[in-house]
Image 1 (cartoon, helix red, strand yellow):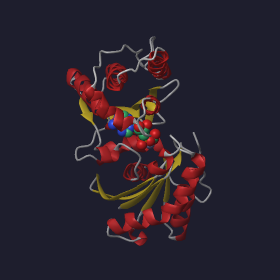
Image 2 (cartoon, protein in one colour):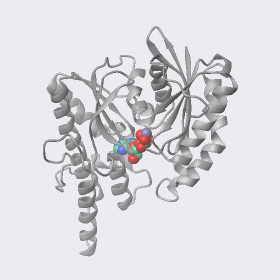
Image 3 (cartoon, rainbow, N blue to C red):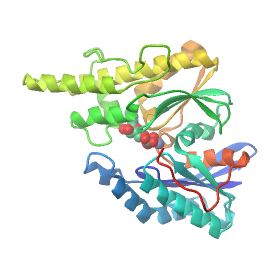
Image 4 (cartoon, rainbow, N blue to C red):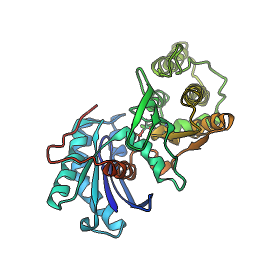
Length: 333
Ligand code: KG4
Ligand code: ZN
C-alpha cells in the first residue's frame, strides 16, 4: 500500500509517499519546503508567517511528492497528517488540506502525533528496530525518553522540565552570532574549540528521575558570555560551543544509559532534529557499545521535520485501525 504523509507543524511544509510491502517501508518521495530563510530574519519562527507560508506551499509540495513517487492521488491508500503538537495555525493548514484530499477522493485519513512520527523515522531504516525498544526524541520542541512497545505505543519515561535540547542549542548559538537555527552551526564550531575550557551544569538533573533540564545549562552559558563582555573580554566562541555541546551530550548520554538499564532493552532509537548532531551520535554510540546495545539513527534527511516519518507513523496507525473523519482537529500540545 502507498501512504501519503503531510507535515506542517512548524516551519517545514512537507509531503512524502511511502510504500509498505511485505512488512517493510520504502520512501518513494520526500519533499520538504523549508521556511528557515524567512524566519531567520526574525531570529526564530514567527507563527503567523509560518501558517501563511504553509498555505502558499502545501498544494505544490503535495503535487511534487506524488509526481516524484510516480503516482497520482488515485494510487494512494491512506493519507497521514500531523495533527499535534505544534503551532496551531501551521498544523491547521496540513490537517485541513489532508481532510479535503482524503474526503474528496474517499481515502482513509490517519492523524499522527509529531514526536511519535520522529520516532517512526527509524522504521524507514534498512534494518529497523524491533519493538520493544528504548527511544530518545531530541528536537527543537521536545526532549524525552520513551519505551517503544510498538510503533504506535510509546510510553514516556522522562522528558525535559523546561527547555528542549534544540531550543537551548539555538539560544546559545544566537548569542554568539550564529544564524538561526544555530544547532547545525554549533555542531561544526564545537570541533574547533576545547570542550574542557568551561564547566557547565549537566542537563541530567539529580534525583531519582530520568528527566532533563536545559534551562540551567543555557543560562550558565549566557552568563559566562555576558560576564566576560562586562569585563571587556570576549569568550572564545568555539570553546563555548565545544563545552556547551559536551555538557548537552554527556547529560543525554547519561540518561540514555540509565534508560537502557531501566528498560533492559538492547536497542536505542534516536530521533528528532538534534539527532543530526555528530557529537551526540558519537556519545550515544559509545553508550550503546558499552551496554551491548544497538543504536538506530536515521540519516540527516530524516532527523529534522519531514513527511516520510509521518507516512511511516501513519502506516502503523492505519494497521492499528486508527482513522479520522472530517471532524479531525489540530492541537497545539
Ligand atoms: O525536529 P526538528 O526539525 O523540529 C522540531 O520538531 O522541533 O528540530 C529542529 C531543531 C532545531 O533546534 C535545530 O537547531 C536542531 O534541531 N538541530 C541541531 C542540529 N541540526 C538541527 N542541533 C544540534 N546539532 C545539529 N547538527
Ligand atoms: Zn520535529
